[in-house]
Length: 115
Length: 230
Image (cartoon, rainbow over all chains, first blue to last red):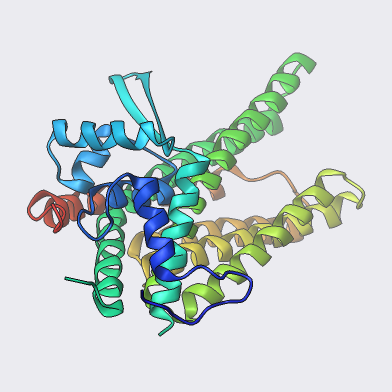
């Protein structure tokens, strides 16, 4: 197990945090990056359209839909259809749980990069 | 094979940096909407104020004018909140990735401080507890701080000074300074429409330029390469 300098108030190791993040995303963060990229992008923007996420991730429509379904199952995002002047648009919004997953990622970065 | 801390660090850093690279286009586009929103808001506020100043208006008109003023400000401030949140989150992630107590981190703290000062000052002015002249002068001062605040947020978000920011901040500063001088010389505290038209034009051009640059980033950074992880 990789142990890094531990904060007494936050005793989790990087491995523990990565394990939690992998469970949150429902995929191992070291094996695949699509869901992590989606969560980071949504954390930065709060909500994005399906088209925005297609552009950011460069995934195919089917593949992106699958990843979004998994994230929705985990309660990390909400998906809704909104009607605008340019027709219906699929809007993806990050939830509180999604923000927690992002904060977890941010915490891992801080721990790893402080070394 | 078991990952080492260096593998983990590199991998997670790469993902974060990739999102930052791709997100730059979204931020540029968001600032395009932000400039357009405020150009429309300043146009509406100053032209209505101008019409009220040169003609006699009924109570109904003044009530509608007041309501429209409030509505325009609420929409513009709400969009500002959304854009500045994006900017704050992006610079926070960049700061996490660089792990430096850099300009970005310090800037974020300064930004939050300025934001609190602005909210408190606007609230004080809104209560009208000061005499009219002092109230007008304080408003000019707050608008200069707003100008500085916009500059700082964009400077921190984009890492370097952008041409559209110079234009937006410059025209806003010009209109506010000219209005202040007009007030000091003539005592006219109504925002002069011709002076603020400079800002409306400047911010409209900044908006168009932001959209143009966003499109350029989109075609070079996203259109051709897309995500390097997919």
